[in-house]
Amino acid sequence: MIYGDLQFVDIIIFAGISIFLILRLRNVLGKRTGFQKQTIQKKTNEAAQNRKPTTKKDIPELSENFIQLKKAYEALDDFDHKNFIEGAKAAFETIINSFNQGDKKTLKKLLTKDVFEAFEKEIDKKNTDLESQFFSLNVEKIESVVVENNIIKISVKFISEQFKNNDENTITKKEDSWIFEKPTNSTEPNWLLSST
Image (cartoon, rainbow, N blue to C red):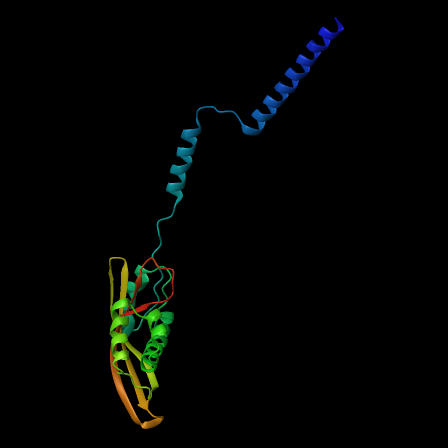
């Protein structure tokens, strides 16, 4: 009979452990009351009501020559006109110098496919000028900013003074209008030359 009493004690001990574990799990996990969906939906609605409407972007005051860039500020989250203008000047100089040196590798990174093909043909025809150098370069005006099919295009008018053979007596003034583009959702800072 002693052996049978031990089994009964074992069952009582295991039942006590089971009840203890169930109560601990219930305290840790909580108990389902049937109101969870409503609570979650209510929190979602409160969050939507508390959400502030999107604020209007701060567009800096732009001179009349650059007033078109307001459209770029509206289309791009991280647009900075000063960085764009400095980048456009650097790109202009790099593209002209790379073209004159026949550096297709550098040009490929800065031009759209169609413009690269046109530049490549001219390089292959030897229509380059290795003796050309920059004397000065300015962005005269932003002619237009257009957003179509999630592509933003900015037309920039450059005025440059260039000379040849280190002779400042050969300075010539040139005006160029170039169009730079990039996707409006791009996180890349680089713009590509899409038209000259």
